[in-house]
Image (cartoon, one colour):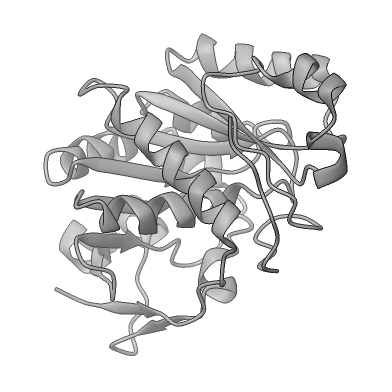
Length: 251
Protein backbone atom coordinates (compact mmCIF):
# COMPACT_ATOMS: atom_id res chain seq x y z
CA UNK A 1 0.00 0.00 0.00
CA UNK A 2 1.20 3.52 -0.79
CA UNK A 3 1.73 5.83 2.16
CA UNK A 4 1.66 9.53 3.02
CA UNK A 5 2.67 11.53 6.05
CA UNK A 6 0.90 14.50 7.63
CA UNK A 7 3.69 16.79 8.80
CA UNK A 8 1.83 19.88 10.00
CA UNK A 9 -0.92 19.16 12.52
CA UNK A 10 -1.84 22.21 14.62
CA UNK A 11 -1.22 22.38 18.35
CA UNK A 12 -4.60 22.51 20.10
CA UNK A 13 -5.47 23.98 23.46
CA UNK A 14 -6.93 21.80 26.18
CA UNK A 15 -10.40 23.26 25.59
CA UNK A 16 -10.35 22.59 21.85
CA UNK A 17 -9.07 19.07 22.44
CA UNK A 18 -11.93 18.36 24.85
CA UNK A 19 -14.41 19.80 22.36
CA UNK A 20 -13.17 17.41 19.67
CA UNK A 21 -13.24 14.53 22.16
CA UNK A 22 -16.89 15.25 22.94
CA UNK A 23 -17.81 15.52 19.28
CA UNK A 24 -16.16 12.21 18.40
CA UNK A 25 -17.78 10.48 21.36
CA UNK A 26 -21.16 11.74 20.18
CA UNK A 27 -20.47 10.39 16.71
CA UNK A 28 -19.71 6.94 18.08
CA UNK A 29 -23.17 6.94 19.69
CA UNK A 30 -24.97 7.50 16.39
CA UNK A 31 -24.97 3.76 15.73
CA UNK A 32 -23.85 1.36 13.03
CA UNK A 33 -26.13 2.89 10.42
CA UNK A 34 -23.90 5.98 10.23
CA UNK A 35 -20.55 4.91 8.84
CA UNK A 36 -20.20 7.29 5.88
CA UNK A 37 -20.20 10.82 7.29
CA UNK A 38 -19.75 14.02 5.31
CA UNK A 39 -18.38 17.23 6.83
CA UNK A 40 -19.64 20.35 5.08
CA UNK A 41 -20.54 24.00 5.66
CA UNK A 42 -22.78 26.65 4.14
CA UNK A 43 -19.99 28.90 2.89
CA UNK A 44 -16.23 28.74 2.57
CA UNK A 45 -13.77 29.38 5.41
CA UNK A 46 -16.00 28.05 8.21
CA UNK A 47 -13.54 25.42 9.43
CA UNK A 48 -14.91 22.25 7.82
CA UNK A 49 -11.54 20.85 6.76
CA UNK A 50 -10.07 21.57 10.20
CA UNK A 51 -13.03 19.74 11.71
CA UNK A 52 -12.70 16.79 9.33
CA UNK A 53 -8.99 16.41 10.07
CA UNK A 54 -9.43 16.58 13.84
CA UNK A 55 -12.25 14.01 13.80
CA UNK A 56 -10.04 11.84 11.60
CA UNK A 57 -7.14 12.08 14.02
CA UNK A 58 -9.18 11.63 17.20
CA UNK A 59 -11.17 8.65 15.91
CA UNK A 60 -7.91 6.90 15.12
CA UNK A 61 -6.67 7.65 18.64
CA UNK A 62 -9.89 6.14 20.01
CA UNK A 63 -9.04 2.88 18.28
CA UNK A 64 -11.40 3.23 15.32
CA UNK A 65 -10.25 2.41 11.81
CA UNK A 66 -11.11 5.41 9.67
CA UNK A 67 -10.69 6.56 6.08
CA UNK A 68 -10.73 10.24 5.16
CA UNK A 69 -11.85 11.00 1.62
CA UNK A 70 -10.99 14.46 0.32
CA UNK A 71 -13.97 15.18 -1.93
CA UNK A 72 -13.59 18.96 -2.23
CA UNK A 73 -12.49 18.48 -5.81
CA UNK A 74 -12.25 22.15 -6.74
CA UNK A 75 -10.59 23.76 -3.70
CA UNK A 76 -9.09 21.18 -1.38
CA UNK A 77 -6.90 22.60 1.38
CA UNK A 78 -5.86 19.50 3.28
CA UNK A 79 -2.68 18.58 1.41
CA UNK A 80 -1.21 22.09 1.70
CA UNK A 81 -2.41 22.96 5.20
CA UNK A 82 -1.37 19.66 6.75
CA UNK A 83 1.92 19.22 4.90
CA UNK A 84 1.07 16.00 3.10
CA UNK A 85 4.20 14.19 1.87
CA UNK A 86 3.93 11.19 -0.45
CA UNK A 87 6.21 8.19 -0.19
CA UNK A 88 6.46 8.03 -4.00
CA UNK A 89 6.49 10.59 -6.78
CA UNK A 90 2.97 9.52 -7.76
CA UNK A 91 0.14 11.43 -6.07
CA UNK A 92 -2.91 9.70 -7.50
CA UNK A 93 -6.26 10.59 -5.95
CA UNK A 94 -10.01 10.25 -6.16
CA UNK A 95 -10.30 12.20 -9.41
CA UNK A 96 -7.97 9.74 -11.12
CA UNK A 97 -10.04 6.84 -9.81
CA UNK A 98 -13.41 8.30 -10.82
CA UNK A 99 -12.01 9.06 -14.27
CA UNK A 100 -11.03 5.39 -14.64
CA UNK A 101 -7.28 6.00 -14.65
CA UNK A 102 -6.35 3.81 -11.65
CA UNK A 103 -7.62 1.31 -9.10
CA UNK A 104 -8.79 1.78 -5.52
CA UNK A 105 -5.50 0.33 -4.28
CA UNK A 106 -3.67 3.13 -6.10
CA UNK A 107 -5.44 5.93 -4.19
CA UNK A 108 -5.88 4.50 -0.68
CA UNK A 109 -2.87 5.64 1.37
CA UNK A 110 -1.78 4.53 4.80
CA UNK A 111 -0.73 7.44 7.01
CA UNK A 112 1.52 8.18 9.96
CA UNK A 113 -1.62 7.88 12.13
CA UNK A 114 -2.34 4.34 13.23
CA UNK A 115 -5.59 2.88 11.79
CA UNK A 116 -6.08 6.02 9.67
CA UNK A 117 -6.13 6.00 5.85
CA UNK A 118 -6.45 8.83 3.38
CA UNK A 119 -7.71 9.34 -0.17
CA UNK A 120 -6.51 12.68 -1.60
CA UNK A 121 -8.14 14.68 -4.38
CA UNK A 122 -5.51 13.97 -7.01
CA UNK A 123 -5.83 16.70 -9.59
CA UNK A 124 -8.35 19.54 -9.43
CA UNK A 125 -11.23 19.50 -11.89
CA UNK A 126 -13.82 22.02 -13.05
CA UNK A 127 -16.41 19.37 -13.91
CA UNK A 128 -16.42 17.86 -10.42
CA UNK A 129 -20.17 17.21 -10.44
CA UNK A 130 -19.84 14.78 -13.34
CA UNK A 131 -17.40 12.70 -11.30
CA UNK A 132 -19.24 12.92 -7.98
CA UNK A 133 -22.61 12.00 -9.49
CA UNK A 134 -21.30 8.84 -11.15
CA UNK A 135 -22.28 5.44 -9.66
CA UNK A 136 -18.58 4.82 -9.21
CA UNK A 137 -18.44 7.37 -6.39
CA UNK A 138 -21.19 5.68 -4.39
CA UNK A 139 -19.60 2.29 -5.01
CA UNK A 140 -16.27 3.67 -3.77
CA UNK A 141 -17.73 4.83 -0.45
CA UNK A 142 -19.58 1.52 -0.04
CA UNK A 143 -16.36 -0.42 -0.58
CA UNK A 144 -14.50 1.75 1.91
CA UNK A 145 -17.28 1.34 4.50
CA UNK A 146 -16.71 -2.40 4.40
CA UNK A 147 -13.02 -1.89 5.20
CA UNK A 148 -13.22 0.61 8.07
CA UNK A 149 -15.32 1.62 11.06
CA UNK A 150 -15.92 5.08 9.59
CA UNK A 151 -15.55 6.79 6.24
CA UNK A 152 -15.21 10.55 6.67
CA UNK A 153 -15.82 12.72 3.61
CA UNK A 154 -14.56 16.29 3.50
CA UNK A 155 -17.06 17.82 1.09
CA UNK A 156 -17.26 21.33 -0.38
CA UNK A 157 -19.55 24.02 1.10
CA UNK A 158 -23.13 23.17 0.22
CA UNK A 159 -24.11 26.80 -0.17
CA UNK A 160 -21.42 27.41 -2.80
CA UNK A 161 -21.74 24.53 -5.28
CA UNK A 162 -24.12 21.62 -5.73
CA UNK A 163 -21.42 18.97 -5.24
CA UNK A 164 -22.06 18.63 -1.49
CA UNK A 165 -25.73 17.75 -2.00
CA UNK A 166 -24.70 15.16 -4.56
CA UNK A 167 -22.06 13.71 -2.22
CA UNK A 168 -24.68 13.50 0.54
CA UNK A 169 -26.67 11.02 -1.56
CA UNK A 170 -23.86 8.51 -1.00
CA UNK A 171 -23.44 9.22 2.73
CA UNK A 172 -25.35 8.13 5.82
CA UNK A 173 -25.01 11.36 7.78
CA UNK A 174 -23.65 14.89 7.63
CA UNK A 175 -22.16 17.33 10.13
CA UNK A 176 -22.09 21.09 9.52
CA UNK A 177 -19.26 23.42 10.46
CA UNK A 178 -20.97 26.75 11.21
CA UNK A 179 -18.93 29.90 11.76
CA UNK A 180 -20.31 32.19 14.45
CA UNK A 181 -21.99 35.40 13.28
CA UNK A 182 -21.27 34.65 9.63
CA UNK A 183 -24.12 32.52 8.28
CA UNK A 184 -27.76 33.62 8.21
CA UNK A 185 -30.10 31.21 9.96
CA UNK A 186 -32.28 30.97 6.84
CA UNK A 187 -29.26 29.93 4.74
CA UNK A 188 -28.33 27.28 7.29
CA UNK A 189 -31.86 25.87 7.36
CA UNK A 190 -31.95 25.79 3.56
CA UNK A 191 -28.62 23.93 3.53
CA UNK A 192 -30.04 21.47 6.04
CA UNK A 193 -33.04 20.88 3.80
CA UNK A 194 -30.79 20.25 0.81
CA UNK A 195 -28.93 17.57 2.73
CA UNK A 196 -32.12 15.93 3.99
CA UNK A 197 -33.68 15.94 0.51
CA UNK A 198 -30.73 13.86 -0.63
CA UNK A 199 -31.71 11.14 1.85
CA UNK A 200 -28.76 11.86 4.15
CA UNK A 201 -29.43 12.53 7.84
CA UNK A 202 -28.12 15.74 9.40
CA UNK A 203 -26.37 14.52 12.55
CA UNK A 204 -25.56 17.91 13.99
CA UNK A 205 -23.51 21.07 13.76
CA UNK A 206 -20.31 22.47 15.18
CA UNK A 207 -20.47 26.16 16.00
CA UNK A 208 -17.07 27.57 15.23
CA UNK A 209 -15.14 30.79 15.92
CA UNK A 210 -17.23 31.82 18.95
CA UNK A 211 -15.55 34.55 21.05
CA UNK A 212 -15.14 33.47 24.67
CA UNK A 213 -16.88 36.55 26.05
CA UNK A 214 -19.91 35.80 23.86
CA UNK A 215 -20.05 32.12 24.73
CA UNK A 216 -19.80 32.78 28.46
CA UNK A 217 -22.77 35.14 28.45
CA UNK A 218 -25.99 33.66 29.84
CA UNK A 219 -28.02 35.16 27.02
CA UNK A 220 -25.89 33.44 24.38
CA UNK A 221 -26.16 30.06 26.11
CA UNK A 222 -29.91 30.44 26.38
CA UNK A 223 -30.25 31.15 22.66
CA UNK A 224 -27.87 28.54 21.32
CA UNK A 225 -27.65 25.92 24.06
CA UNK A 226 -30.02 23.55 22.26
CA UNK A 227 -29.01 24.45 18.73
CA UNK A 228 -27.99 20.95 17.68
CA UNK A 229 -27.30 17.45 19.00
CA UNK A 230 -23.59 18.16 18.75
CA UNK A 231 -22.49 21.63 19.77
CA UNK A 232 -18.85 22.61 19.80
CA UNK A 233 -18.06 26.33 19.71
CA UNK A 234 -14.46 27.16 18.88
CA UNK A 235 -12.80 30.56 19.10
CA UNK A 236 -10.16 30.04 16.47
CA UNK A 237 -9.92 33.34 14.54
CA UNK A 238 -10.40 33.47 10.81
CA UNK A 239 -11.64 30.73 8.58
CA UNK A 240 -11.09 27.22 7.41
CA UNK A 241 -8.17 25.35 8.97
CA UNK A 242 -6.82 28.18 11.11
CA UNK A 243 -4.36 26.55 13.48
CA UNK A 244 -3.76 29.08 16.26
CA UNK A 245 -3.90 27.56 19.71
CA UNK A 246 -7.13 29.06 21.01
CA UNK A 247 -9.82 28.23 23.56
CA UNK A 248 -13.11 26.46 22.96
CA UNK A 249 -15.99 25.18 25.02
CA UNK A 250 -18.39 22.29 24.60
CA UNK A 251 -21.90 21.72 25.89
